[in-house]
Amino acid sequence: MYQALYRKYRSKTFDELLGQDQVTIPLKNQIIQGEVSHAYLFSGTRGTGKTSAAKIFARGVNCLHPVDGNPCNECENCKLILEDRMMDVVEMDAASNNGVDDIRELKERVVYPPGIGKYKVYIIDEVHMLSKGAFNALLKVLEEPPKHLIFILATTELEKIPATIRSRCQRFQFRRLSRKTLVQGMEGVLKAEGKSADPEALDLIARHSQGAMRDALSLLEQCLFMDQHLSLDQVQKSLGLVEEDILDQLLKILIQERDFSFIPRLNQAYTDGRDLERLLMDLLYKMKDCIVSLQGGGPQEKAQGYLEDFHLRDWLEAMHALEETLKNLRYSKDPLLTMEIGFMDAYLAFSGQAQGAASRVKKDPTKAFDMGQEVKKAPPLREEAALLEDSAPEPEAPSFHKEEKPVSQDQGPGPSPKKPEDFKEAGEDGIIEKKSSAQGQEIDLDLFDEARDYCKDQGKISVYAMLKDARAFQSKGLVNLVFGPNFQFHVKNLSSKENLSLVQEAFSKVLQEEVSVKISLEEEAEEEKKDPVEDLVDFFGNDLLEKK
Image (cartoon, rainbow, N blue to C red):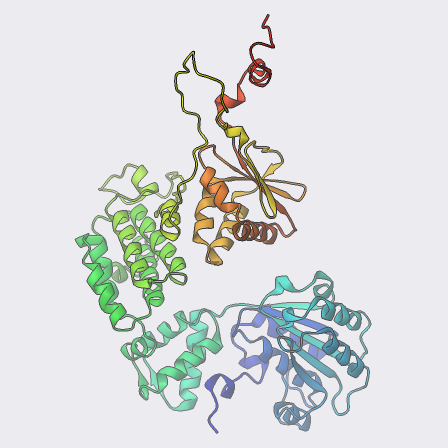
């Protein structure tokens, strides 16, 4: 029966586990010295060897003839564990067994001594998926474990593990693997399979694996069905990537030709079924490599053709525009249109018309960017207000501003027009009022941006755009969002049940505490300076008051 490459070539010893010396060396020494802990916590991104290391360690502590801290994989115990036939080593998936009853059942079994091996080893994968009650039940076992018991917890989200659990485990962080390490692992697999590949092809696979060996072997396996020898072109076709010459054409259009001829090329790539996200990622990688080369950090041949009229500000503005487009692609109903708009933003950057730092700083065309020059942080290239208008047409909102008109002497009494201070509404989960109480500590801009990004990640681009015009303050479980006096529409829109609930959820997540939200309109300076006597006159009338 055919077996996937990442399963067929799973590491069987610590020495075969590539790029994780900070984990393998301490674990080997513990086995050699016979001093093992009762609980371990392995954390790191996917495909970096957490489960493989746990299985190797389980064999190592039960191996009859360990070799320099590694399991021999030849003794009876090792063979039983490799074949998943030893009852003393249990692998549990917390994603599907995450209830308190599952952990209670486990507690009843762990008290019994091992039947064959020296230790009972429980490997709990994706442990962050356990419920709160399950964690509490597990905590009791970790506090008073039997001498024959070892827990190995593996997770990709360390921050979700309670501190009471983390403090009772030895923690090991698995790193992302470098491209060189990934290529080394793939070369070993190719040699064992009797196949070969060009170095450029393996490097491309490694770049799209994001530091995960399992991803690299899965992509390699997919490409190997093309031919016995892998070339760069075959990998690009197999993975749906855009060829290097197309990326060169797009980049040269933006930098040298500076016209909109990139639109038909993007349309052709979309028609050919190219992955637009990967196209954009590859273009950003290429631009980054060119910048590094032009600044003396890499081989100059990568930047050939882009040396003339080079301004780092323009390149960075364009990359920020394309990066913002990459974020918006996943939520777009028309990805091609989103791509075209993003390339137009990049076109403006290279033309010196971007609404960012590059357009506000006078450039010397004979010099490259001075890294010591202070440049203010540029706002996003695409005006977020435009995003708001695109996502939902703005209804005609009532005006809350006074119109200065001459008052006729014979004008009869009548209802007075509503003033800005009369604007006050009750929201679903917060308070929306005219008067601003900007008290408390102003929330850090980075945290505020995280809250806005959370709203955007939930698909609420309009909420993300409206929050840009607010200032945020925090005081005793309350977040006060203060808008200028001309942003009544923003306040009314954010006061809807759905939007206000999302904003409250965003700030609660970022601030790591339950908070309520109050949305305020900032008073105009003229209203703040109003004479208190005039308030009395407005209330009682001129005929009841006598000014002295």
